[in-house]
Amino acid sequence: MKKVHHLQIEPGQLGEFVIMPGDPGRCHLIAEHFEDAQLIAQSREYVTYTGKYKRLTVSVTSTGMGCPSAAIALEELIMSGAKYLVRLGTTGALQKNINLG
Image (cartoon, rainbow, N blue to C red; front, side, top):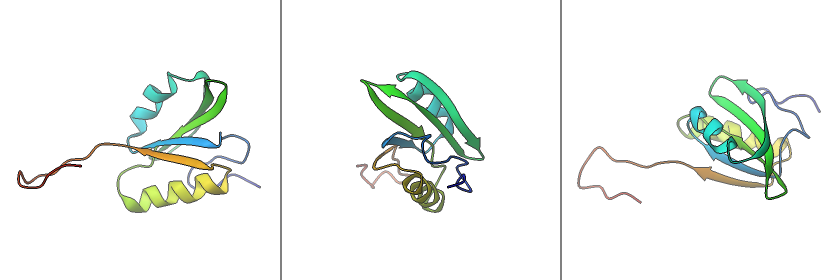
């Protein structure tokens, strides 16, 4: 299989476990906790690193902002071999009467 269109990754470049922050800048911070972290691809809002964590091959890929770009990332990660995906992010509200969580 060739590279997926948006993420620019191909099967074999990912771990089965993928952490998915929205912000591409967080990928580097997360990858610092991996052993032998390698930048796999960088395309628009999508940044992917793969490395080892406690002997498991793990990856981190940013999803960008919003549901459409997150859906693209999720679908292409699964097409590329990801099996366990965890979305990591923040939450907020502009109105004080809306509770977070």
